[in-house]
Length: 300
Image 1 (cartoon, helix red, strand yellow):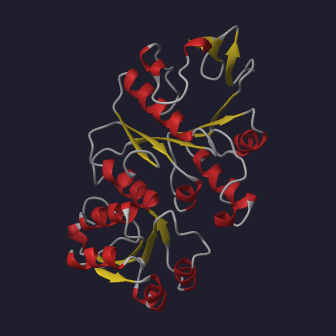
Image 2 (cartoon, rainbow, N blue to C red; image 1 turned 60 degrees about the horizontal axis):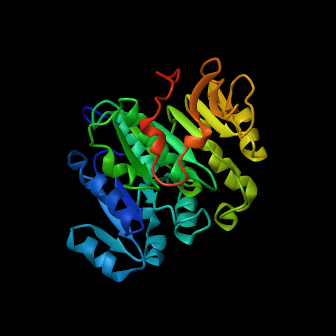
Image 3 (tube, rainbow, N blue to C red; image 1 turned 180 degrees about the vertical axis):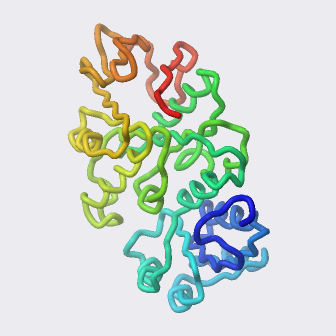
């Protein structure tokens, strides 16, 4: 690239996109937008109607079985979250020694390259339960504090579809599938709410599932639910330079929790009252976004 470089994406790179539905369409649209690179895009799926749609758009289109046979014709593979590490087409890519990205990995690299202007500040939320509600609340709090934010990821639009928006923050819900294929993501803040057994077949067991969830904590600020033993353990081992836990009871120094009926911040200040627990919303979009302003996190 001339003004913004993304490793492995150079002139004429042959890219196999696995999945021809919402995520795959977002990937193809993003790659097509890199017209200056002349990328050679092939889509693989087992839905013939979806494949024909991509053929009509001028892209290559293969069944997953055919894609496996012709993996040597590719330079990079970008998979939709539904394709797990054990999927035959993914195994074929591994055996061919090809780099494998997810759509979130592509989004992170494109954003960091400056192609869409100044890189966004990603706030990532994951967890077995509660991540959709929490991500929506994060988005509301960012906007209530006077910032500009786009809600995306596993909620709302794919991250790729919002990179061209004029916003400072991305409130990103990420599943364990998405995190698995996004090893480069380093959010300005990331949270793991909780970790319980889920999708173990996809991840090859609890260890793999937990490891992928932990990727949300590799950025500047790591936040985790201390009432969940696994999430709390991930926080202790996180690479982030700033760590904060939250609990339903009284918080220690460096934590957020509940004291005398108030949500209190002892992580980024000294006993800062944030909101009365009785005023916290139950599910849905955050009603508390208009009632308080979040503290300024010590991030660049």
